Amino acid sequence: MIIIILNGSLTGDDTMHLRFLCHSHRSLIEQSSSRALGVWDLSQQKALLFQQRGEPEKAIVAAGGALEAAEVLLTLHGQAAAADLSRFTDAACLTLRLLRGLRKPELTRRLLGGCIATLQTQMNQRRTATGGPRMLSPAA
Image (cartoon, rainbow, N blue to C red; front, side):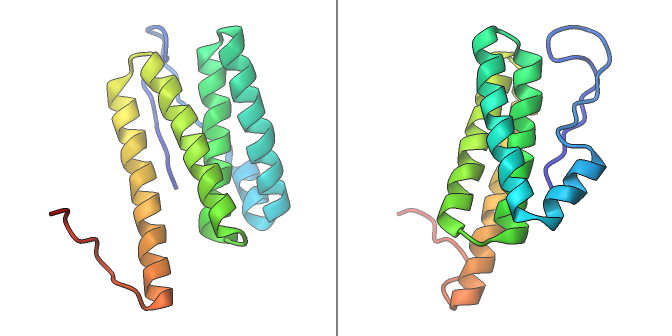
C-alpha cells in the first residue's frame, strides 16, 4: 500500500495530511473489483477535471485515489493483468506529474519509490508463478 503523510499543505504553510482513500473506502474496493474499477475511473476523471480547473490539491487527492484503486486492482484482484498494469501506471504518472508541478520533489520521490516497489513486487510474483527468472539482470 502506498501511503504519503504530508505535514504542511501542498501549496501553502498550513498543516495537512494527504490521504487518498479513507479506511472504509479502501475496504470496500478491496472487497469488489467492480467497485475498485469504478473508483479508479471516477477518480481519474476528477483528477483531470481539477487539473484543468487549476485546482492542484484537489487534483492530487483525486489522482491519488485513482492510484490507490489501481493498486488494489493490480495487487488484490489481478483479473486483467495488462489492463490493471496500464491503469496503475497511468494513475501513477498523473499523480507524479501533479506533485512535480507543485515543486514537491521529496513527495514525488517517495511516491515514485512506492510505485516502483509495487511494480517490482508484481514482477517478482509473476516470475515465481511462471518459473521465470527472479532477478533483473543489469544492463550491459
